[in-house]
Image (cartoon, rainbow, N blue to C red):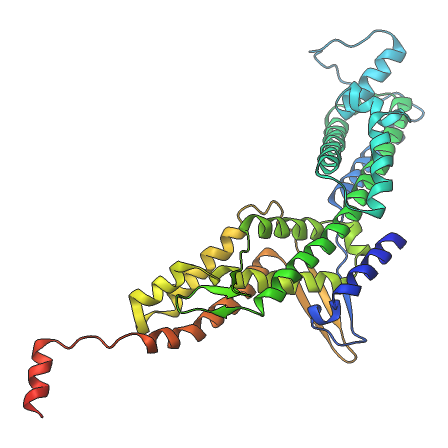
Length: 371
């Protein structure tokens, strides 16, 4: 946690986060607590084990005969291990959870140490996500097994052992979730820095006669794939409960504001089709046509968004509070509004510079007769 504080202090040396978040000194930004769905499912699964344990204490449970469709070892010890492995989805994940020297445990420890200090590499993130998927699948398998099978096949001792395995899996899942959250905090800091670079250049733009914007005599290029990456980072972060409890709300609000303004600018900046629309329609161009074009450009940036998470940021002032929703819908809506208003300012200039339409022959004759 101290490393995150130090990193944030480093970011604040170069960026005025309070200014970017548009808050006054002394205000604070609270981040809504979000639930970890995986931990909730673990809790539900553990509840399924306890009643079965209680039912099996002191007397045998009437076990309905089951049609055997797979090989079950006859040896009692091997048979018990078989059922436990079956409960979590196989021997490999079972051994990974009960072996203190398993590859998964080693990966968790090594990535945990690194994520506290800095962002993980793409390869490390891929390994982390893959391992999270395996743990999630083991949990879902155990949940279904306990609902449909365990009462017929597991003795009380087996159920107690399965209870311990599920507890181990829950702790492993919690650790992986925290590692991802720590990584995403660093990633959000990087996104804010990158968006701020674009935002700073946006304020220096100059519109040319052709309708293309330039900055420092060079065309300002904002790559769509980079903006898409920023979107993915922010909305992956928004869904992590560890991050919501440990990130500075001012940083998240700054990220929200910067994303809205940069995406808004991107939607009409240097876009020939916007100005072609003006040239074809002249002063008759409709705000609906402008909004449709801008909405298309903004929504295109969200096409690759893999997460549709959301949370609420609350700005707490001296005598008031204000909520800001950080969601795909809210970001799109505000970016569109800002872009439409910005483009409307350009319409009179384009219309005023357009040549007057030529009068028809009848109009010219009437004007001649009328003097």
